[in-house]
Length: 139
Image 1 (cartoon, rainbow, N blue to C red):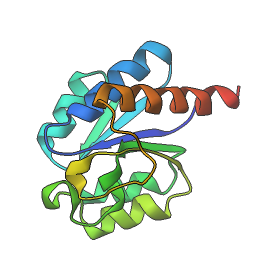
Image 2: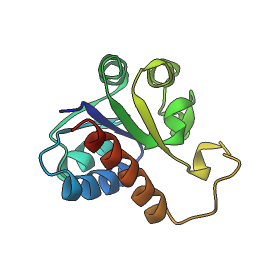
Image 3: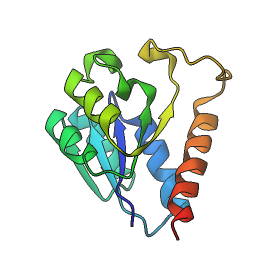
Image 4: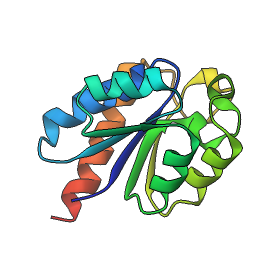
């Protein structure tokens, strides 16, 4: 079983969408919700995450041996998500050996050339497809 981290901040809406969709396609897979704040963590746990933790240390600690990390593109950028992503969090995500599934969100002040202007649901679907592929390729 892969160690899959879902990182989110603010209200955790994106993380909830990811967890809801992933639980349908990978019902036996465990998911760890890591929130930059307690509201995001609580929302992702309510959405079905198996474990959850909040703040910098859980992010830094869990990124060291994660297989897959998913969340908004801002998790790679210090001070993104209105300052909720600390420099240590961004570094931990960036240095992790995990596959990173990043969802482009304009609110992170990052523009990714080549991404089409899509609805958040379309980006979530694409992220879920990639995570499912990564989990199933090892079986």
